[in-house]
Amino acid sequence: MKRRSFVKGSLISGAAAAIAPVTAMAKPEFDKPPYVEHYELRVYTFKNEKQQKTTEDFFRDVFVPMIKKQIYEPVGVFTELNPTGQTKLYVLVPYNTYVHWEGLNYRLETDKDYWTKGSAFLNAPACDPAFERMDTSLMKAFAHMRMKELPPRNQRIFELRQYKSATEAAGKKKIEMFNDKGEIDIFKRLGFKPVFFGETIFGNDRPNLTYMVTFKDMDDKAAHWKSFVDDPQWKKISAVPEYADALLVSKITSTMLKPTDYSGI
Image 1 (tube, rainbow, N blue to C red):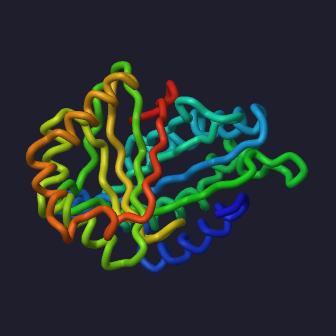
Image 2 (image 1 turned 90 degrees about the vertical axis):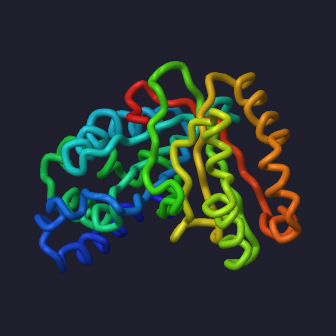
């Protein structure tokens, strides 16, 4: 999604949310399990430090506090651990339910304080934009891990991994490995401290699944992945012919991230 699409997209989802009263989202039944969380992932690309500062100022001073106030959710804000050139900014917004995603856009569109405080970012002129590009996707949590799990707030780095599949059937089969065959349990047992697992329901490079795991540092990351590859349960799962990566995964993307000082994750 390119810059300026945020406002247009928000207006569309705002109109959809207006069908039901906004106050309905505050009803207790929307905040009680069993529910399946959704995750919005935004990736901002910049051409210089000024753009990055404008965007980070907006998220630190306006967006993150507003989300805490509106839907009581922590927002993850990350930069690349070892960027090539100007870093990208990764923003992860959790929602208890899809309804919260719809309603938040409507509420922000009608919040004058939000538009006033965020004017430098939201109303940046075309000749001096706040970012070059924004890519966005919405994910639905896996059935076997319906809610995010926040890692300890100590020294940590994050790995954001995406598995792209060539077909819808292959993508569903790969998710089956996580949900039904114990792959998520292996991650937890080996101490990866996964934050979320999500199936992308709209966004780029579909079909794909995306997940985030946590490490102390790069040496810790290497040790954990070695333990995963050597794990007897993983060897048993991956040895099943129908679960071969060559059949189910066409591309794997790994991005190492570090949290900003104002990140809620």
